Length: 220
Image (cartoon, rainbow, N blue to C red):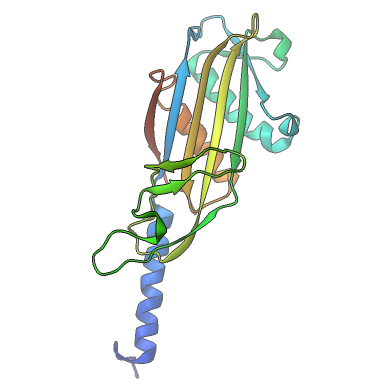
């Protein structure tokens, strides 16, 4: 039986294809990491507290997709001991929830020798935050989980959720938090549940502290 020598044209193509497959599998298995910032002021204990989850963005209100993600938030708060109600007028706490993902940015790794630097930003951790939905200036120190896996060109997306809790009686804000992540996926069905899980890991957390939360990778 004829076999391709590793140095032949077809042999090299097979080696390249195998390497690309291994890199793709490694990327799929990468854990989901999110930066979570939380602030709280007199967040009431769960005993006797009711809540309703509403859309921060009116355009999302009534949508089936929003209802699915809001249901996950509701489950998390109920697990903590808060009591969900459907009618915000009957809730003691109003939970305002929002989510989104940007349009993505291409990343091209251009290394020379053993240098870890790439692109025009002088280092692997210099990342822009999106100027669209999530806004914000250039951000130094953003985590990119795909820098070291050998991919030369790929697209990364920044996703995020926000969670705000107000007292219904006087409208006073008692909690607000954001969870943001960079990944090669832009599927909200994957991103939002992971971001919610990150938000409620160690909830409500230490006020004013930003932590990195790691959750399981996307299942294929």
